[in-house]
Each structure stands twice: as structure tokens, then as C-alpha cells.
Length: 165
Length: 184
Ligand SMILES: [Mg+2]
Image 1 (cartoon, each protein chain N blue to C red):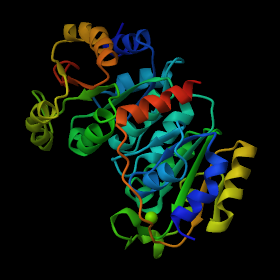
Image 2 (cartoon, chains in turn purple, yellow; image 1 turned 90 degrees about the vertical axis):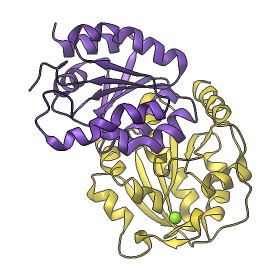
Image 3 (cartoon, rainbow over the protein chains, first blue to last red; image 1 turned 180 degrees about the horizontal axis):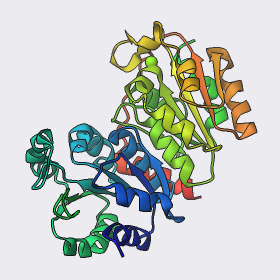
Image 4 (cartoon, rainbow over the protein chains, first blue to last red; image 1 turned 180 degrees about the vertical axis):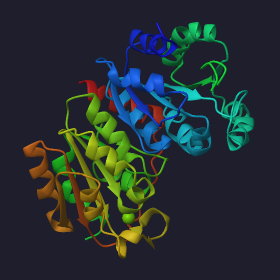
């Protein structure tokens, strides 16, 4: 089983049925697996705050949501995370491509990488960092935790986790 | 007619349906005119009423009306292609277009100038788009609910606001009450 298939297996096992995505090369395999899975409705979003709105609606409609996006999106979505997801106390697992870490080929990505964990910490968002493939074994527990406490939760996945470029 | 006149007119049409209402004065006015457990009031996050409404419509079978404004649609213009390409026939997007940012003091929007939101929605691929005068909004909504087809309604009205209190309900109470209504 590929790591992407393993991740989607854990999503389905936790009844995640609505996934919105803004693409990233690193996350391409997961996005393909999400699109292909019959138990998941996949709704691509044009911007990450829009995606978080879709997820809020899906959750209130009875479907557990997830958003898949790049860490650059933390800069885009702070207002939405605070005034929608946190203010109304909604669960939102965020599977995030942690661009700008070791093995990153694009210099500009490092500029947002250095702010990513600080911003998440400032927002009191529980944050997990997948660096080695075995780290993904915790995904099931992270998802259960997210829907237990009704918070946005960040799962950062770096280039080393995805096997580099 | 301005936005609050439209909300008064449509209240009997929407009161038994799930409603996601835009931030600021629209939510405050609807809350004052006809508070219902089936209303989800946005207290922040400008622009996302249409997105929340679409996610809700795609996730359960009841009919959903998102009440948005011209300024809010302009701030989240990416919502229209997403709506067009993820058809939910239980979804109606009502854009109350007064050509201004009402909640911040009626500064003009581009929708009140050269930009036609109905044409934008059509160009984005929305199949059923109707533009109506303010007085015809309630009938257009009733028609869209009856045919049960995904519809974008652009209701053109005058700018201008009424005095209305802010919503002091706790957001988690609003959300929990709404979710109970969704499930019932
Ligand atoms: Mg307006």
C-alpha cells in the first residue's frame, strides 16, 4: 500500500466523507486517491478560505470534512480559522504540504516555511509534523482527536516524508 | 426597496428552509425580522456564506438558501466556478445586490458600476441564473424552491440600512441550534 493509499484508508476509517483540496505537487497522490474513492465527495476549491467554508457547511450537514492544502495557505486563512472554524467550534483536519523544508528546490517556499509553525502556535492549533513515513501511523489517532475536541488541527507533511523531489 | 425590505418580503418563503446568512447587517436584519433555528448567522468571515451553503447542500438533502451580498460575492468570486461545477439541486444562492458595501457604510462596489454579477455567474458555468427587481425576489425564490434546481438569483435593490441591534447569541449556540434543525 502506498503512503497516499494509507492516508486515504485512515480518512475513510474515520468517516471523513467530504474533502476539499487546493493542489500541491507533493499531495498529488493523496488528491488522486481522494478523487478515486467512492466514499469521499471531493470538491476542489479555488482558494483555501473558500475550502474552509465548504468544510464548515459539510460538517453542519453531517459529513466529516477535511481540507488538503499547502502551508502557504496558513497565510491566506487565518481570519477564517479564527472567526469561523474556531469561533463556532468546528472540527477541521488540515492535511498540509509543508513546503520550504529540507529538499525544497524553490527558494520562495522557505519564506513561508519559517513562519508556518509559529503561526499555528500563535493560533493555538494542535500541530503534528510528519517527517518520516512511520509518522503517518499516528494519523488515525490525530483524526479521532480532531473530531473529539472540535478544533482545526494541522498535519504538516514535509518533502522528506514524501520521499523528496 | 433596500435589503431589509427584501428580507421582510422573503421571510415567509425561507422560514422553513435552511438558511445561511451573510455577515453583518444581513444577518442582524434577518435575526430581528424572523429568527429561526433553521438560520445560520455568520458573525464574521466575510465572503463565505455561499461556500458554507454549498457544502451544506452537498452533504444533506434539505433545501438550502444562502443569502449573500454583492460585496461578499466579489470578495470570494472563486465561489461561483465551484458552485457551477458541483451541482446541488437543493441549493439556491440569493445575491442581494445593492451595489454597495452596506455593513461598512455603503461604499460603492464594482457590482454597482460596470460588473454584472448575473453575467459573471453565467460565465462561470452556473446553469440557472436569474436577475430580478427587488419586488420580485420572493416570487423568484418560491419558483426556484418549487423546481428544485440549483439557482443563482441576483436581486437588484437600493442601498441603505436600517437601525438594527448586533447579534449577541453565542456562536456555538447558533451553530448547535442550526445543526439540530438540520438533523430534525
Ligand atoms: Mg451590498
